Image (cartoon, rainbow, N blue to C red; front, top):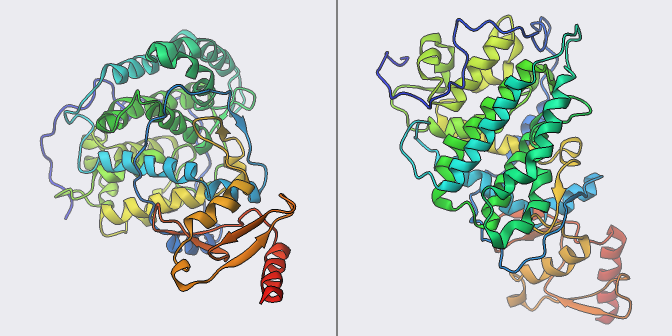
Length: 437
């Protein structure tokens, strides 16, 4: 049974979802799909087999620390596999899960701890919103890509370092060099005038860097979502509408959303164990209108319905399918797995991800040597393999075992690792051990 009308607390001062009276001068992303393309069943099966990511504690950096300007390192599937085998990947993904858990069963307006740093972050996003009001869109007939966005992006980038110094303590001021690129990349690409989940991931990486720096703590996570990320999503909606940003890497009708993903994760966590609202409640217009200011997931659905025309099941079949899931907990866990597969495991998206001294890029040789140190389950059985690597001629490693699947004691999950060597090297190692015996 759908939720009855109920009185609810006032949402944040600004409204994240459009009201029925709003009249956007916005061209729909696409016309309603009459003949839907076949669903990517192989991707769906991959998502189903993927373990649910787990929360991970973020340990602040030890000072003094040498900060560096971040750069792109992912250029191939092998590079992406290297990143996925690293502690940086697991800790970053675990941070996002922690943010999701911090909003569980909580509305956006619920009281929470708001530190002075978070108040500063929210004020920075408000200033960027004011920039939009000061830079109107240029007259043009093109469907996407209003050139005035470049002026907004240039102004934002020019102020970015000053923004960072507003909240960084004196001992961390040098970190501005490293975190500014994450911040500026989080609002889209000025050359292509587009925005997508890759840019959203870079903004999340900026928040992760703040946690690694210690300026954001675990007790701030709820406000980080409800006060800071909320305003970020609101700002991006304004940019998308005002400057007609093109969706970057959209999956078409079989994508979750043309621009965003994380609001659905955080929003579904908000609705876990709700007494009245179920996933199917997104089809109730009264519920959407009354509660979209309190729940990110509902605000996303409202926005999609405003900017896309036609039947909801045709232009957003993925969201329509999710509405059939029995409870929000399963929705949340499924979206976390989907984010890992559809965003974090896609080279076209992650090739723009940045690595520095905070989010470290770990080369394959390091993974090769340290992975064996993490793999001790067979040591008690006396299994040892002598491995020689051409990367270090004349050096012999005595390790516990070698296999494609390694168990990380840190997380308890099974990961596929290349271990920095080619398959021929694995065969050579086994041959050397056979000769030794």
